[in-house]
Length: 194
Image (tube, rainbow, N blue to C red; front, side, top):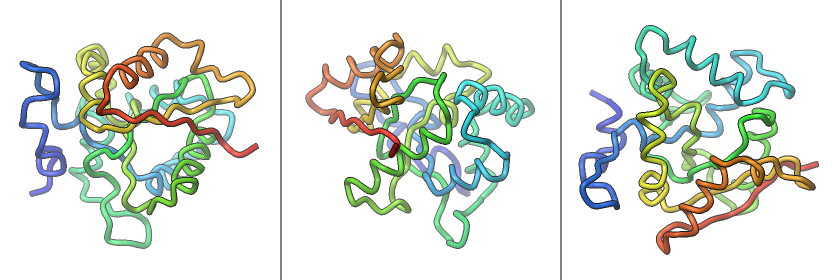
């Protein structure tokens, strides 16, 4: 049966930091295609900040107390109009300010996919609100640096482009610093089209 361990089996190996292991659910990523369907299903508008989505995630996972992606894996859902899974091993870590619009965050992710000519069905973003268990945040965020090193690609979202909020947030700076401290991690910037 499909599980977070079968989707990200490499989680069973030691993480890039000796002695530490990364839980399988922390190596999952979600398809941008699924994220758009999630926005439509939950009627998320352009003004909703990602922080509010965290509250929605806690509500949706109140019974399981797992991450949204763990529940999604167990649901056996597929991407709209395809037989492709909505989540798999993460291919890119997204660093963003949770005070910014979730829909604009998706616009920025789409811009990154387009700019790099990536197949959106093969892109699985590590997005905190979907990947972290919202009922035990502290346990999961302790692994951010290891997660970035494992994925190998970090994209920082500049919103707004002329005065990026992410550059004023400690967590975003922490994520960027971890990316820059490892030769194994590439760091890119993206922004939503204006």
